[in-house]
Amino acid sequence: MKKAKVMLTVIAVFAVVGGALAFKARTQHTFYRTNPANGQCSVPVQLFSTTTSTGGQLTQLSVASTTDPCPTIRITAAQ
Image (tube, rainbow, N blue to C red; front, side, top):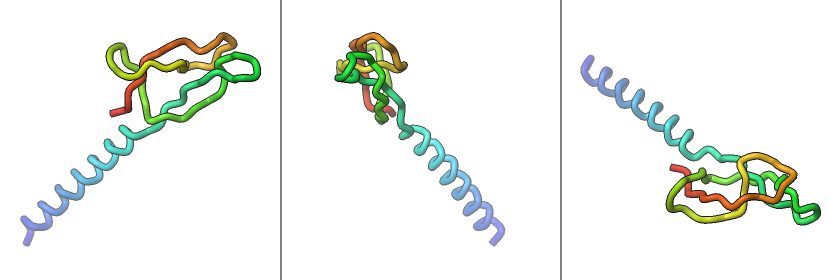
């Protein structure tokens, strides 16, 4: 019976850690898109994406708000 309790405890701990890692992987990132009224890159957008240097999708977003137009960056779905 003691073995069963230990095994169930270990499984529960792995489940909690796995859930925490899965939740962290699906957090939203804030990007900014162009405001049509003034052309500034200042409208916040929440996406399940992250920037990448290769592959991904080209889009005009920024990782920081700016008074300039948004640059073209590559984003990919967050893992």
